[in-house]
Amino acid sequence: VEDGDFVFHASFAKPLQDVARQPRTGGVPARVDDAASASIGRRYARNDELGTPFAITVDFQTADDGTVTLRERDTTKQIRASIEEIVELVKCLVNGSTA
Image (cartoon, rainbow, N blue to C red; front, top):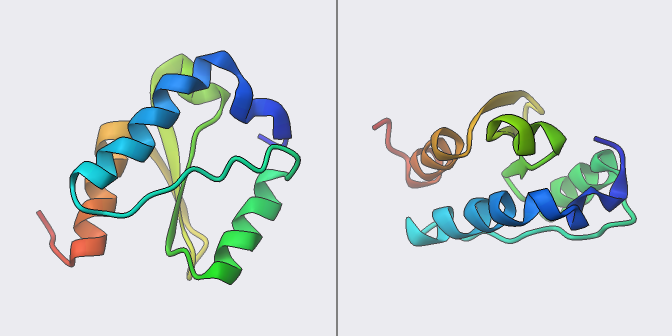
């Protein structure tokens, strides 16, 4: 979603909290990039430059079906799955496990 105002959409509040909280609970650092004026492409580019290995994107589809997009920095590949599945995958990747 290229609309920079989507971060402030009321239907994103809970998914954003879940996506930020769940990895932290599992010992994985996470933060919300709330640069509302930047497009998703610019956010990805900025985080790539910072060395952020994974990005989880909450968008309007998240509000509809509870899925988010996970983007891997080095390959730029993306997958879409439930918040719980993506958070668990990120925890495994960061901790070097395959569980």
